[in-house]
Length: 410
Image 1 (cartoon, helix red, strand yellow):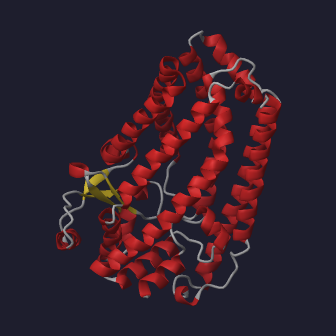
Image 2: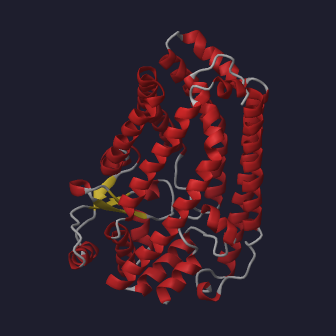
Image 3: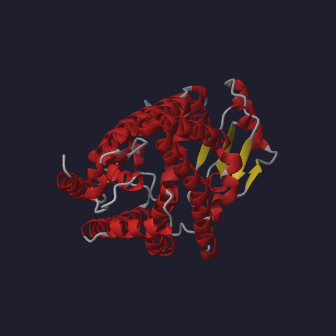
């Protein structure tokens, strides 16, 4: 294997993935004007359906433009020595390989995010705004960016430094220590996400006393679910779209409801959504997903250990002085087809888990309130009611609305 062969493999993967993704998006877009399934006729009226179609078409065109731009940018970086240029800047800053890697990835990540800001700004303040979703102020938008950069520098920089140190100390066996580090970090974040990360971006408050809280507590007691913490998050600070999620384990276990969810749904519908979320916990879906994620990370790191010392990977992206950080970039592209396959499997099982959680809500609470809740949530987010089956197979972590409703009514 020489660097020319690896270079052409990288080019092929980038172009093939773009063509495949563009084809999937095109097939899905062809479904936008399909008639609404009979079971979903009450989701949209004529005017709302036309608005939904316009929203989907606008996002399709936006995503096509951004994906073409991204492909051209990375191809230009590869073909015209962009990675070599960034590496030379990093090399000039220090002789320390960890510092070089931090500078290298810092330039690439901050640079790519700076390039992405106009696109993200347009999506938020033009597309989402024009369809009535956006509630984000310009100040919040840019403050969020600064917070994300700060987290990337602190957390990402620390993790990268430790990984390179493991490599210097343990050689190709570094993957085992890195796996342990990432596994511990993943567990930590899963437990303390709502306590440590969410407050950086949103305000959380305990659900106020009232009939809703009483109903939630009664249902939780009925199904044997120890629920001490019910929080409401100010999702309306950024968007009108609604959500609910379960997080944490043990004493950190909590259910979080978006304030938009409480505004949009009746109490019985909120209970049904909550029953679905508790179903995920009762069926151990959160544990399965966590374990699977950690195992897949270990598999990826094992494969990385076979490539990281190969100078051809660095040379293939134009970096003449082979390094850990350059090899990491090349490996990330080479591994992406495998990542697509594992993503397919994760989505497949995720869709099955959604059916199981729906069935749990149907069995322990009721099907009809969940059906009406799902319809309202889909309507309020202008969801696609007629996605292409191939697109669903490739990208959907949840079954299409029509399939979930038919399952609930069965």
